Length: 416
Ligand SMILES: Cc1ncc(COP(=O)(O)O)c(C=O)c1O
Image (tube, rainbow, N blue to C red; front, side, top):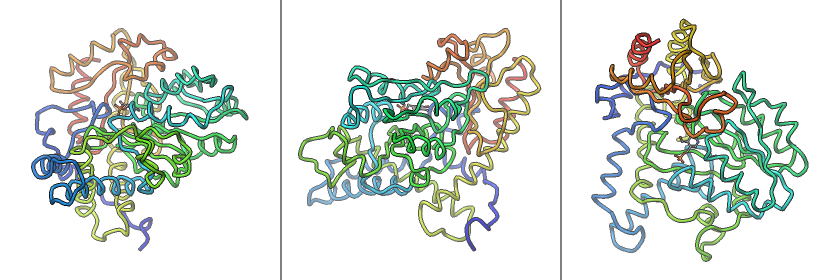
């Protein structure tokens, strides 16, 4: 039976939670957009690497051979997760660092007078490094959010695109408002104007499956420490574009390794070796819920994310329904729980209160939330906010139980 005809079961939340040791600490955790918890499959892989093969990968001895095998396995699986080819994935320490490196690597694509479009919705990671290219004579234009809807509107992009536009940088999902942008549509617009896209998928990848080929993106960034993995990040780049980049690695690393050639160095080995632990976790979730193995890892991961999306939609609806009962609360972004429309990342403001007042009050009930600008610093201005105080953010993922959402609601109900 084709995948689309099958009924998707409900996510077994107790099953998935049993993988995450941190969930036993008594807190209801709502800072997942800052960094997610890690399943034991990842933790075990870090430990195994450091215990059994902490050597420079390579060589004819057992530990070196196995270390190289683990590194290569990570590179292969990560590529398969997002439907990329192996040589198209650059693994680095963080998205901030990776974008910085790419902003140098893309130098051959820009001449003085060329234009780059950035947004004021992005986390600064996909903004500052591109803006700094102004020093090379590039003109940077800002695609600004509609301050009422806190949305990027495609009509506004059309007005900015021109024949000198070389690159459009934008987020797949806002790490503040949670709204999901139509990456395929925006990318098609940019391509029609002759520009490339650099998409920040950091706030999207923990929630929905990423398929870089279907989206037809040129570059796509995500951080594994928000996708149930170790503190690492990756950038996907289309092979032909990577080959046109200025190498950032040693001169003798050749075109047969297009991603490594553009990477400014190797990421930490033990963390890289732990990346397949994310896949181990997805595999366990898949086989717990589905009888038939899908054809490919990529398809199995898509099935797992469809479980996550359905659960996230339910917890989103519960939380949004609650917020709607509070007239003094202003939700930032979409009041719509649909999985296609948003991730379960909610930011809001409370009339008569500073955002900083809420987290300590919630913490009294062991409910973890945070306030601030979350490095989407430039978004605070159209929202009329002091960046030091910012918004209150509560962010959920698939392992967030409905009971946790009810604890959050009860804690907020005391405050609001
Ligand atoms: C949407 C978004 N982009 C980029 C980043 C930066 O990622 P990193 O910490 O890997 O540099 C973050 C981190 O919070 C983020 O939320």
